[in-house]
Structures are given as C-alpha cells and as structure tokens.
Image 1 (cartoon, helix red, strand yellow):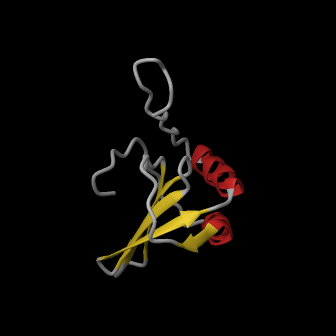
Image 2 (image 1 turned 45 degrees about the horizontal axis):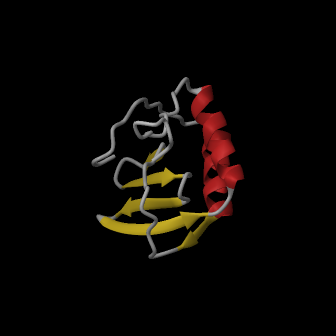
Image 3 (image 1 turned 135 degrees about the horizontal axis):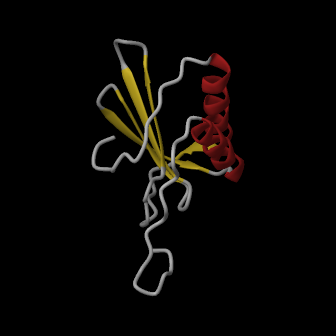
Length: 110
C-alpha cells in the first residue's frame, strides 16, 4: 500500500463480504480533487483478478481516499460514517487490528 505501514492483512474470496465492502464504498464515495491535510488512512483494500490490481486506501477521519488502478491515482472523498462501520466489522472478522490515530504530546489526535 505504498508509503503507509500495513499492520495486518487478510484475503477473502467470500462473495458476500466483498460485495458488502464494495457497497460501503459505493454508498459513501464521490469524486473529489480537494485534499484534507490529515490523511492518515486506517483502512485499505487491494482487489485483484490475477491480471490487474486496484488498491483503495481510506482515511475516515478526514473522509478522503486514494484509489490506484492502471497506475493511475484517483483522489476521492467518502461521506458515509456507515461505510467505516462496515469496514471495521469485516476487518475485525478477519482478526485485523485498527490502527490508533496518531496523537500529539498532549494526547490529542493530530
């Protein structure tokens, strides 16, 4: 996932699980070329059919994401908090940890 640290990963071929994640992305996504400053993603997906790979990286804190497909970067925003709940539940079912958001010296989220 590029410059971001991967703290856990799992594979799934369960069609209903993949459809649930795709629906969560579709529900909350809209095109965007603006960028919030925090972008500390804690969710990522990598889809492959064996020939092509699509990577999606999401920061629900600032509601921004990156999609890399065909060596092309697309920036987007994701507007639904419900999408994060879906991601968290699927990732948790695979035993994946959720990264803690970075904090400053006073314990406040950065």
